[in-house]
Amino acid sequence: MWTRQWWKDATERAAKTAAQAALAFWAVGDGLLNAWTADWQAAGGVAAGGAVLSYLTSMASTLKGSRASASLVDTGGFELPHLSADELLELARKAEQRETR
Image 1 (cartoon, rainbow, N blue to C red):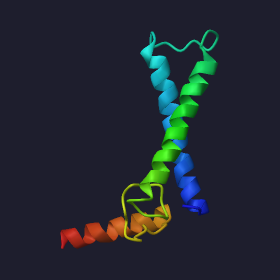
Image 2 (image 1 turned 60 degrees about the vertical axis):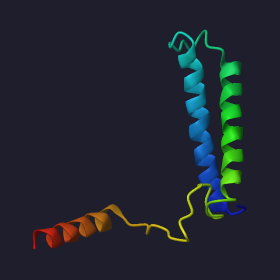
Image 3 (image 1 turned 180 degrees about the horizontal axis):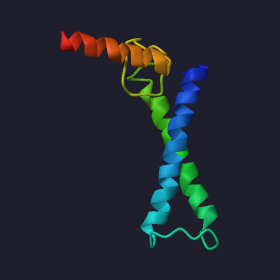
């Protein structure tokens, strides 16, 4: 949990949750966002609350999932390889060739 990768993962999740919480806050009202009359302090508080809950959920997830990730899913140490777009296209071409045989 104390690795840089874990914190990057948890921070990405917290930022997404904060944005979703702020959008939900505005949607509960009249559904319109007027930048001049919006209650930015309340929206910021709701977003911060969502981010805090997300971090706490990520911390709790390490009890069940992988300790290297903020995810509840345990990958068993399996990580997807980091491939470039060209490498991915080449793998897709090879897979397609195998299917047509």
